[in-house]
Length: 193
Image (cartoon, rainbow, N blue to C red):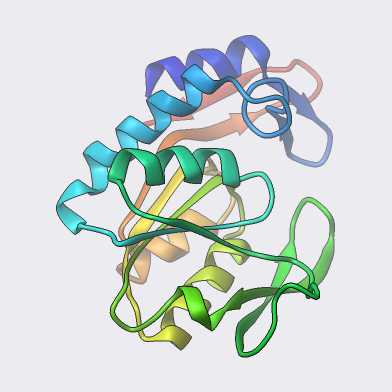
């Protein structure tokens, strides 16, 4: 999506360690108009899959996922990164290694909100190595639900996650795929899916 690529070029910041900061408009401070456009594109890409739930992981994907759920007219659920007192009873869990935080954690989702009757569309803000998506897909498989596909705002195409997931036959649509970026110059290049 050209408008997302343009926004990344204008307001994104490349940091050492292959970090792309888009926190001024996508995952810390949120631009609601941008999020609405992303959700509309996800609807265009996945409407034929007829999802009954939109699933993401806390916290950065929530804004995009909830707007996408609104456009589809279905509930949005998110996997939590920590067990809390208000998650009682039976849960699905999966281990995820965070690229950004450099640590492994369990993600948790109450079994009350995902069943084998559901058709699930996973939405997230970033895809690098694919660990978060793999954790969410694991939870979907544990529930017996159907995976419609995965919608990603920004994919780091030079890291293996997207390539590996696509090679496994998972329907994966990324709205902006970063082909390369350079912290020294701040340059970013994109490729088409």
